[in-house]
Length: 370
Ligand SMILES: *Cc1c(COP(=O)(O)O)cnc(C)c1O
Image (cartoon, rainbow, N blue to C red; front, side, top):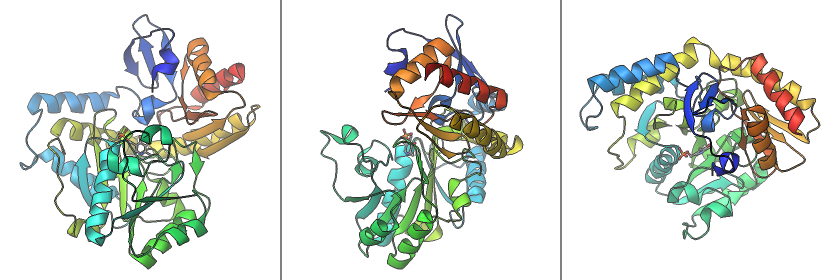
């Protein structure tokens, strides 16, 4: 998965500071993938490091049935931030688990089995989330359960036709990330909301990549004016510590069945998440994502590329040559790290702290490698 950039020339990453990573030998990299979007506040933000160190010194772990002030504070914080009625919080350790939980809650509350998801979707690699993930490469050989009906992403009629009274959940990314950076067309998420209201299915929005300010608002669904029944968040929530959350409406929480996890809401990841949320709010990183993202997008559009898509600091650049070669040249010749999204898309998901000079650096490097 990560071998393609550094496969030929082993580089050991030794440290990170803000938007940069550096290697053992002192080479510096501008991390415009934010390490799978896991560093929204930049690498090693001092507030996050302090919070983690001080929590670790007090208590590394205590079983989830014993309340802690840190976990309670994070429950309250996420409950207040959840869109619409999504004020019930389930904490876990990864994105795929957050989606598993959402699907379990939806099945329990509706008594239905079927899930509707989109072609090109990525929701994780445990069996339930994998069943809603499109790419055959990820599915092959795992006897993936077949209760998911896939529809063309962005086609409201296909969604209307697929969702019925037997449907437990409609699971969608507001902007498909891994699948090539495809934003939902205008009105599509509204249609999903309507169809779920008509049939009683739960609308689950996977904001694991789009959330936490990346697209210019805390959640991408806010910009679409749609309130889901469940929203999942992971990746950058703990600035790289393993923590994720499923935020659900009352009707899903009241009838959630029995779900659990040993590490749910561990004190150190919770401390990291609280500090990360503070930084995102205090430094107004969603606004920065909108501003710098808008600037970056305009600059990218002037390059000889096929397309530039996305919102805020979640941008996909469709290139004419293979994305992997472009990414390798960016890293090796220009010290710029980015991510692929399929064979032809260079995906930019930088820390939300980047400024226009970082954007210029990336555009210059892309211009040179293309
Ligand atoms: C990364 C990702 C996941 C899976 O998260 P993991 O923490 O790797 O399990 C799910 N959905 C989306 C949209 C993602 O980007």
